[in-house]
Length: 456
Image (cartoon, rainbow, N blue to C red; front, side):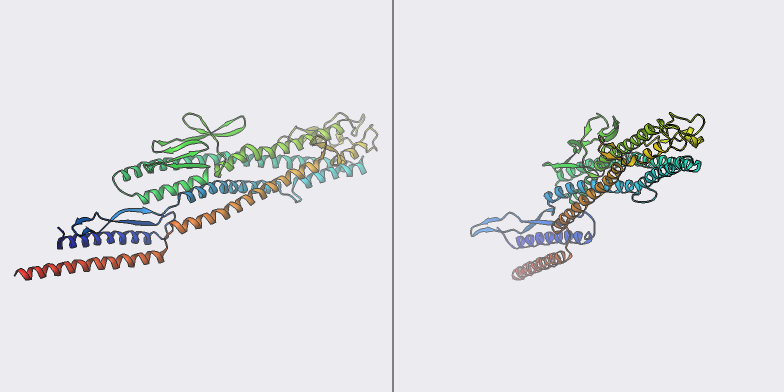
């Protein structure tokens, strides 16, 4: 039968429960500026009632659990957006370096060098017997070849640097998946002992956010509280442990595989996905087009030049102006660099003839690329423009994803973020409830004293 002791027990439970509420509120206030912290809340429930002849009599309250406020749907949207945005940002950074290498439009760009080279042939056509004009052609040819080689080397170095960046990102991914797997085990153990590991879950969510910036991830949570994480369809972290990944090159393509079983992952998002697209597709495309341009220029000039005649008795013929076959190895033929009189300006060997010089000067008007539909200038301008177009495309994607990400993060903050005004309101509520429970103890004590006085 309930009595004064039941009143004291009810008051005791109220004191303890409100104290838990104050402790949780204090924890929220202390972490108001902590990145990735999720606001926690005490879940109260009434203790079992007692049946009396006049009905059920309540016995108080208990702090049943401490939970965190989190929206898993928003988490998934943020991590998906993270992957798309950081892929675009990574590509934008590298493409900006490529654009600087092209350095167009400028006097130091390849377009200006080609113009100066063909203009030197026009000068030679005006003065076909002038040795200084021939030296000018040789000099401009050397500068043009060096321009091709410089641009090719810079693109190639950028290409190789991505390989190093991929290794760094893979190390980061392996570290994060290992930490997530370890946190899975700690969360399961804490939950099994009856605890609510909210801070551990926050830490795991921060790791997942960081991982989503590096690669396209999917994740799912099971009944034990463990999260299974996959990258490109391959499980890389779970309650069973983590799976390390590595990079390998096959057929000029960089692939991401599991370190142990060599199983390929389809990485398309995040910083790693951006690097792979640059390494496997974008930069090889630029290099291929640059080599195609250099090869067409070499072949066209050499075809005209080798059929012409230089100076001398008898006049030289059958000499190629350029050596090499691509942007990587293009150069002015060593024989011409040693003796500019070998430069062919005449078609029939006559010293004053300028037919070949005029033909080479008009090469910019010849459609020798893209199935004989584009001139060298048109082809190169298209290549340089494609770099700018690619930058604009990834910039637009990055800006759009950043806008979406900001909106999603604001929504998550409204759910999980700490509002000091709300916490102060909760603190006052718990404090007043605590004071009222303490007053209940005093009241019960006075009632005991009254009973004792009656006995006395």
